[in-house]
Image 1 (tube, rainbow, N blue to C red):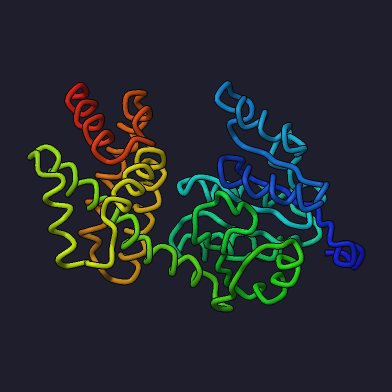
Image 2: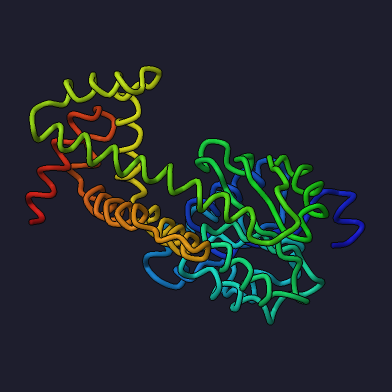
Length: 304
């Protein structure tokens, strides 16, 4: 990083992966005054990449022609790809990195994967283990982050100048990822349990009765709101959540723990992600749990 870049707070930022997270962070940074932002996504050359490229053009992001083109002269690379592609994304840019840029790995992967990625980029980039710990909207680039690794202390002031909200959790790579992967066991697991419980209640024609009975054990929780929120999240993001939970399973195995509950969560999240794509389900996502559950049951019956 150059002295001029630090003084002007105008780093040249590149995104590898330009899905929901990349678009949200890039749009926020552009609005905050960062002008030199480039992006590359492996979908760009395909028809499926048209929406991604349109989003980049809308936000004033330079659409790169390759991973190498995207990271050319970058001061900071933000990797925001699918969990399965995180290591390959690093391989695609490693030979093309210059001037030892920061490499912010925000991918939802296991600590072991992040350690492997850091080793791959050693000497080419200053790797930072980053965990996004809240929905990316509406805060976008201000969404709370956990960061870890030997370069966390150095990059933190720059990120804070960019209005990013963060907490340094360790100088050891993988610790931020571990926090996210372990907490996801609970968060995504509760989502899956919510769907399973309330779907059964609806099919038994006991939705209200089951909802009321839950308050006996959890009197401070509004289960109607919890169900509405969790089911909508699974419908819109279940497939991505399933991929993340597979990384949670890897994390638990790295810790010597068999991920019995996590594997069930993967199945339920992935199933709901597929059902959630159906127009009949999407049409009910603002209508409350009863309507959503009816639509989900009908979609599942049609599928079977």
